[in-house]
View 1 (cartoon, rainbow, N blue to C red):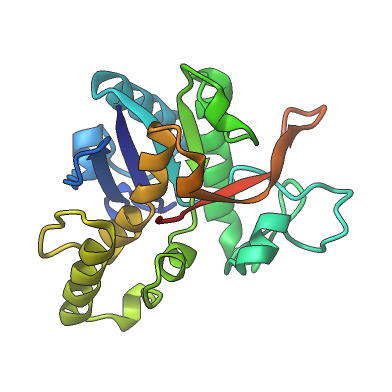
View 2: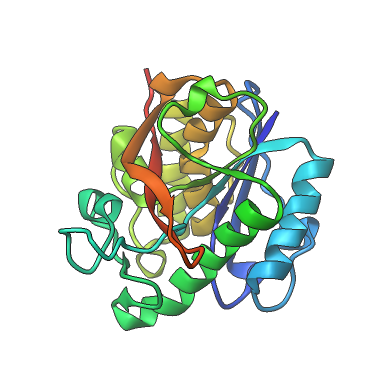
Length: 239
């Protein structure tokens, strides 16, 4: 089984960061969006169809996406955001359906949630639930948050894209390789590094190893309108 991790973007597919790992190999690949059939401006239904096709052909059973998959539950005591976002202090806060803070995050959040919705309801990918490791023959589509993953792996958090130079990216690549044991090539982009840092969580899911992940939040709920609410953000945990 393979793990595909994507650092999403909502305006151009070429801004996606993509990492592909075969379970147990420790040698990630970094395909371009075009290799996944993605070009132009992201649209959830088309993106889901392309990912479904690529994952079937390449035996991908775990799909990690850096973006929310559920809205805030309207009865939550936490204002403006989901529980998982409060715990991890994500920069974008997902409100009730159609709302986000800051407002300029709404396009990205809406795209991500729509993408999860398509993958789950149209193509049958499973959303993460407590006790996931006891469920066999599932394909998991999983919400990740790479920024927190760096610190959970004992590393300095990767700064924002506008504040890092090539030398910084090379240093982070080397450190990530040392911690994970992955053979990472030189020249990785900021987006590719963000996709790579959560791969240990995907690998643990592929191996059905609950000790290799940290789940933040609680089980997703589907409301009467078909909206996915809340859900887990999954982070890597090394032994």
